[in-house]
Length: 490
Image (cartoon, rainbow, N blue to C red; front, side):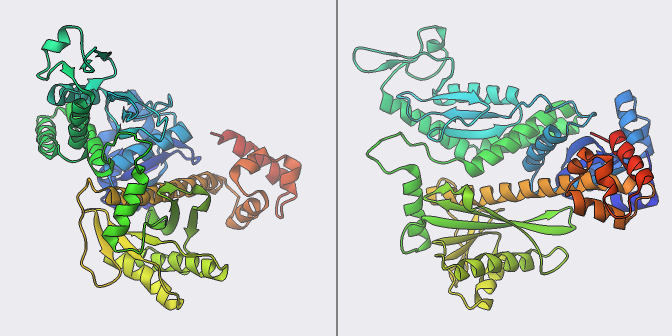
């Protein structure tokens, strides 16, 4: 391990929050991707002498190869878990053994089109009409949870084969299970759907007591040094927290009834005091990349659904540094200055990921441009509180409120889009940093190469004669560069 003074200083400057770290060898190749609750604490363990004497040969070999690292900060541990999996799939580092088989996390699916909806496990969101809970990181614990819910609520899982009776009722089980569960085995569809509503309600926000129990059990397992058990409980707690924040009310499909999106839009418009349902909504999110610079995303929902052709992403141009408020003012100003110049109508609602400070910065952008702002609110993530741009006090809606859940989906999509942009930029930066390790290749020549070819991938594919066309590259240096890129290919 190349433990240089600059690397030690880099470790000392790490943030004490959740994220993903990427270990690199001397050629800049990513050899390991990991997640952490605290980047500072986790990454520093790789540079402790006691760690280098670890008993497992694989760990020793990994530590010996570490020459540098990069990090990606996120907002929560579940987010770190999912980003870790994405980057492992993308880079396939040699010292990672998980996620490389392209598996996905499990979801719980409930199809409202079924007369007796069942709770099934799936890894893919196959359709828009079904309800999905998750993702859940620990499949074994998820299956145990569903088994507990079957006993608690009398719901059907995927293995059930209910039969319709002549009197219009349904027989749920025809085997020994009818005597195992404390619910009537013969049930009418409307009564069974009340069971389903209760089970979904349990996943939506009525499981706080159970969640506290899991947290307590997780802490006890960690204190007893039962780390595998504690990690499994941790994954279940994280997945449930995500579910409690994101799921929405179960509704039976009825072609004559308003859709869930129409209902959510109507209720949101009424709750926020808008002139009508916000058929066009845009949401902004600011994201950091290792604290060194800032990017932003804007997503648009039309009639309650993502309008991906209208998504936009921004690099901050007006300053260098890490300032959410200035960044928000810049990107909001850029977006609506252009829309105004092109004569396009503003959305019915602008949503800011953040609290009073971010909302105030967005409003400042409209004032600076002398533009009349559309209705503007913020969604503060910690308490899921709606913050207004006028004098109204903050509003905290029940988690089951369809309007709030629509705002959450919009906000989460903006955050996902920003994270994807972060990962793309970081990947580009990591790949281009490979050139830093070639002796004799200074910043001027590196810049000339990237200006000519645009990316490391295109440079790798270039012929020696094409490289010689770049200013400063003769036959010898072009040949050495080709050989260096072949050695460091990954």
